[in-house]
Amino acid sequence: MRVMAKVAGVMLLSVALLPVSALDKAVDKKVYFYSADQVKNSYGIDPKAPNTSTNGLLGEILESKFKGGTYKVTTRRKERSQDPEIHKAKSHIFYVLEGTATMVTGGKTAGPVVEAGQASKYVGQTVEGGQTFKLDKGSIIVIPAGVMHWFKDIPAKPWVAFNVELFE
Image 1 (cartoon, helix red, strand yellow):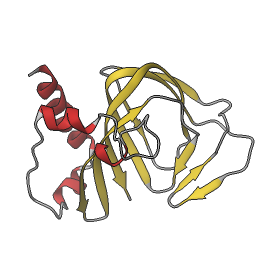
Image 2 (cartoon, rainbow, N blue to C red):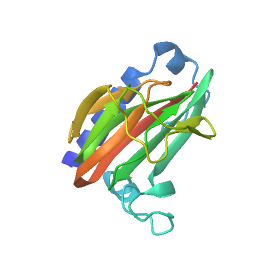
Image 3 (cartoon, helix red, strand yellow):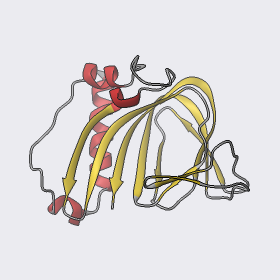
């Protein structure tokens, strides 16, 4: 019951963070409900994922469109650090469900960039400068499109978050 209340609260908060004009322009007017068990199952380890420390496609809950863009609702599971990246046209809103992670936003990398679709990835690199955040249970971080972000460390495994992605 407590998990259900938290998930419902996060979903309401995420919707509250969307621009009012985006909500008014929603193409898909269907209401979606996911039980606490469905959400919890989505952040398990996906045995079909190439890297077994992630939830892969298992974490994808909903993708829908609004006039001017698309949004996706997912859960994210991480058990190790991740290469720094920048998304050209995607913003993240993370609400941490369990675990802790250290995230660095902004800053610079010293090496080459690998273009991967709409993302620029800095494979095997670290970020110098920027702001460091401790993402622990109950915290929320909003990362706008165009901002470097790096999961530097995952000390309490697994780190699981509810994620809303906004695509421009």
